[in-house]
Length: 428
Image (spheres, one colour):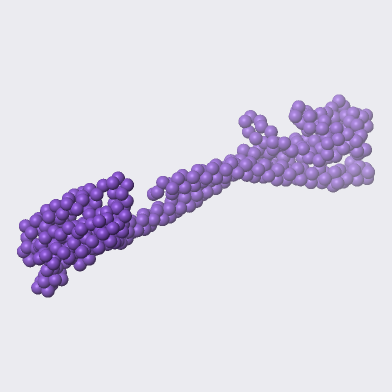
């Protein structure tokens, strides 16, 4: 993979990691909020159930008992907490409800009708409940909600004030001498009395454990995080695979472009440069020679009587001879020399750092090497050479034309020889 794509994938990985961490935080917050909402629902359900109990006791049971007392069927001072005490009845119902919850492995609800002056000590408000009760009596309205920690466990605390003392309430919570005799026999005349009219004497105190709900929320968060992590990993791997395929295609295209560029400047038969490639190299070498003041020479080579080879042996043999001929030339040249197949059986050689005489000497060495080499199946070959030195200011086409004229001069002189072109007239 390219460095650019590798960097892009590293940045994407960083973004995914940050997104995963952010989502984990969001899931954690949502699980906390979910636990709080569920705990509130449970607490409100308990509260509504207790309000229903209170309403039933006040509206039904007490009314019925007062009716029976009015008809003389019950003593006027009759009092039974099992039938008339809303606090007692509510506590008994909650104890049975929590017993059922324990049987099913559920955390019990904390429920208490808390008072600072309870008739039954079991209803005595703790310090926390007394503080909330004072807030209610100081004018705070509505429910009191707060998440509290106790023994390392989180609880939702909900407190609701009971109805403010009315005239009916004062019968049992006012002065002891006005209370029913049965009530005094049960609880005495010291606790639960001397309340003031209009004051909130107690509150419904409910605590709902959030541990189970939090555990459930965290389990859901872990599942969501696992699904999210797997999803993000799958997406990342898909993108990674796509980037790798894209990178592979890009490399293939680059390789194809390089190959196309090579083919564009390469002769397919001999593997040498073609005209286009040679002219590009020639321009570069000429600029370099002009800059440093070094000589340059061109040698044009033509295989003598090559047409006879094609006519006698066929073009496939002719092609093989051309390949062997070009390989021999290439093997005899210096590393700085540049050779191309100019066309047909003609080859053009650039000889850096060679003047006319040096180029002629190099051409002569090549001619002798060719003459001494056997080329199956045509045995021996000869070639004619034309050599021309470059003169500053001369156009490249003119220089090549002078080299071509020198080649024709060698052919006209009998072939298998080297001919050197005279300087251009402008230089003469």
